[in-house]
Image (cartoon, rainbow, N blue to C red; front, side):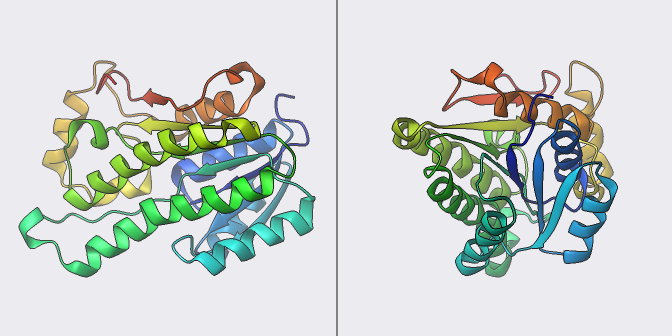
Amino acid sequence: MKHQDKVVFVTGAGQGMGQAIVKHFAAEGAKVAAIDINQEAAEATAAAAEGNVIAIACDISNSESVKGAMAQVKDAFGRLDVVVNNAGVGSVDAFLDTPDENWERVIGVNLTGTFLCCREGARLMSENGSGVIINVSSSAAMSGEGPSHYVASKAGVIGLTRSIARELAPSGIRVNTLVPGATNTPMMQGIPDEWMEQMISAIPLGRMAEPEDIARVASFLASDDAGFITGQNIAVNGGMVFI
């Protein structure tokens, strides 16, 4: 199996892409920590996955919560090999009508949360002298289409990835950004129908991605097959945006 006995930390694991990523890594032999702010959702994913999966509740926008989750992973599995920073939130706000609290929440989860999991994960992986971090951004970061707080947060993820990929390379840790386009997940349910129609019509392959499409690419980036790839944006968007 491609990821036999690797220890993988997946945020936003309670639904959508995160749930698919957990299931895929577990099926490939990994030991997986399903991380979600909702303990019941994390437990449901762990129960649905076939393999060695534990559920951990964590607010990734909170430093102490992230440190606690990482400590639980080390206690359970003794090491960490892969971090997939998939968790994300959004809201449909016009720029001029965006409340401060919505800006702070989206930046706090999507960007600060990614930073915290990268930092604490890298600290743990550096004990091994190797590791992989996969940060999930969005095609919106490249096109600029979408609410300003969401676009800004996902663009920040790309910049963060490029910076820490250089800094962590001497430690044997690779860092890449997985850039999905429109994907068939519960998060898309809040998107107005007009926006949905526009997004799908802009995809040359003629459909949204399925969560499994994203999971397969995450698996590749975490594997030895991607051993000389770091600091890159890997788009999985059906040709929606070229990067």
